Length: 198
View: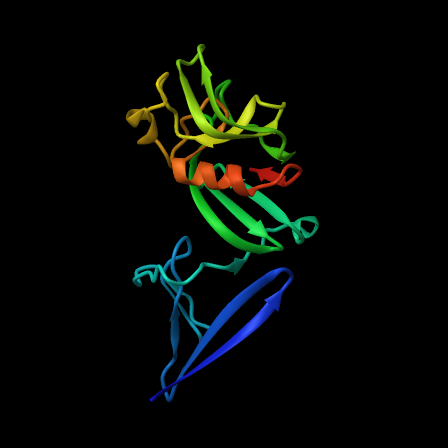
């Protein structure tokens, strides 16, 4: 028979619900949804990526690669090799987003290093590339290198062949996100937030 214990832990400006299952004579597991997906054995076992996800539970985990200076407030990490954006709040990962960065080895490669969130806007259109995007947030050169939605055409409609490239290098140096993720990023991440890209 399983006993269910619930506890609330206060982490700087964040309330985490912790559910611990204890099963007599058997290792217990807890469902963890979203970006990390699967089940984590509470007996110290690892992640089972094939386990079903439970959309009713928030994914919150600590990031071992969060620099100490980013332990308070928001912090963004972009992995070019994984085509993944990870957002942390007070050192705790709160969101993972598939992205498309610039094409490596070209003039369109996404710059790497430490940057900071600058200005933002709801829409832009580039005559040069004949495409635009929604929900842009600049991280370098005040409007040149951006986080933004997948590309849209002159009328604001998503360009499906470009949107289908999400998850692989495809941009002109910016970091493309899904429309939903781009809007969340635009509405959530404040100016001055550190961004590491590698």
